[in-house]
Image (cartoon, rainbow, N blue to C red; front, side, top):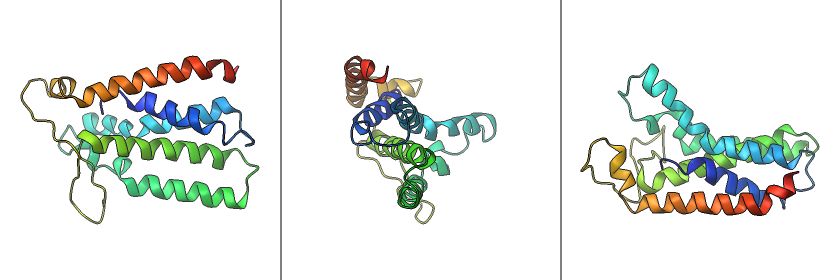
Length: 167
């Protein structure tokens, strides 16, 4: 995914607001936590460009390991089992769900090491053939990009529908 992580985190969070309406956290903060979780794995691009200089595929970094996001999600659920009245475990829950969604969406047309760090094998549902330069043009002309545009449309629809609810 190139452009759909932010809106996908928003969509997930907006659907979680209703079941989580009795939490001690204002809905807008749950929405922000889930949306930030949706884009957080790609913060590893800073390391990719400025430290690693593009030598290792950024999906190999721990921020793209499903195990990390599953552990954070488990930690949030465990924390919630102990104290449901604190805001932090609810925010961690939304953040980790957004991060896990990011990795799942990256699995569509990007390589994800689903069993890292134990197995060095990448998985992807669809292979985008490298035909054009620059590299990102291959993704834009692929049918997967239509899915990304649909996610943006869905998020805009949800925002128009739910925007009034957060005021």
